[in-house]
Image (cartoon, rainbow, N blue to C red; front, side):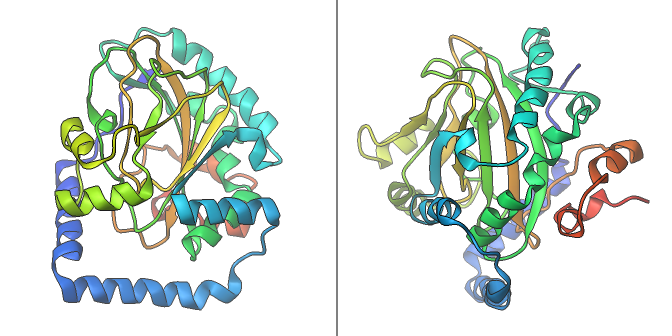
Length: 301
């Protein structure tokens, strides 16, 4: 049932790091890349889907703060009831299985895709409308990442401060599958204005930052943690916010994360090792719009 976290190849990590360094430090190339991206946004603006008041409020909050926290049901996604049932079926065995010395454990791909309402939830039109309006361009969807953060107090991987490097902007929806308190590994973030200040002072490009360095850069008490009961949802742009998964110390944390970026991301992501049967299942019943959101590597041979 349990699989280790997928590992990006050293070559891919190096290539992504070099690309990020170049776009950050070589001003003419950065201007050219940003100009092309703004042109894509300008051309797509007339095609952005209309939003209702609740959707527009969420987009506005993301633009202003980079994060919005509340009950999953507040997103009013039609298939959320089926999603919760599917997540309960996956979370039970995941919570009870021996972690095998790992800090982060995940279900097998077979378990993840046993009920397609889980993986395909992030392709619902209401969600795509929100994401597309925030990004300003058509979205790429990376699926569902169900994970268990083991309460071993270790500060490893994404438990360290960082900003995501996938793209200029992303949308991630992180949902608690169990009750999460301060001892249970909550999502923590530095508010946007203070993130921008810290990033500038630290000359930050990518990678992990020591906790002591971040704390020196922000006002006392400004770090925010997203605690809450099961089905609390954190909607965030982790490319803009310094954030981390706080190391759980008293109890494991169970969560699922859904991720979207533009279709011209800054970082090349390594796709899971889907089989042809997995891909046929994922693509089944999808509309043309939904199929267009899948990464290029998820086509059927």
